[in-house]
Image (tube, rainbow, N blue to C red; front, side, top):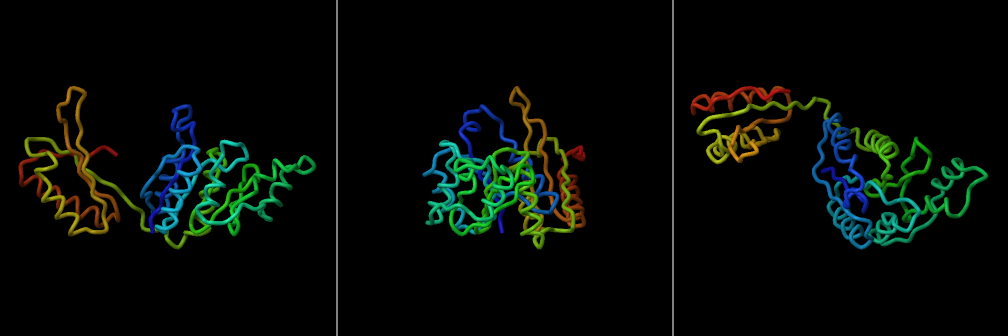
Length: 252
């Protein structure tokens, strides 16, 4: 199962606000031995959000959607989710209880719109102010405010996906390679060999270039289980030494 993110908001696409969700979600997944597979950024455009959700719902991924579930006219995520699911929006009973508990005597119809979700969803509790998000078919819809959204994501991960956590910690190691034969195309055969012999590891190759366009070094490494990473890195070291390529460990 792949994990993805949809980050919604005209203010992010315009540059008025910087996205704070991508890095934090990647961190929350990483400490649980999971990896983010994809991210999409969308504006507050209902048709585009609905089309994206139809595609991700069909793919069967676990998706975290950030933003657009408020009650102002520019918030379109709740409506788009209902459209993608082919259901109507209704006031969710559990959401209503949370919102009434939050506002007490100050409750009104406008505030209850915050609990109007696609029919058939479950709520995601919001420990910050009790205004919930919702989830359906491994899609989790949370607010755009990081102080609300990120604890809600943690709750969803720990509640629904703990059986997928990898308890063996993942490690990442890499060499910085320099020299005449330290470019990617010259090392493709070695990379393909590592990928074939260590299929559970993630291999990465990152060339570095200075501002004047001169190649500086190639960062070549793998990520995964400690013992396998050590084996793969030893294989890489032996081969680059055989080819006369200079190497040093990449700083942590």
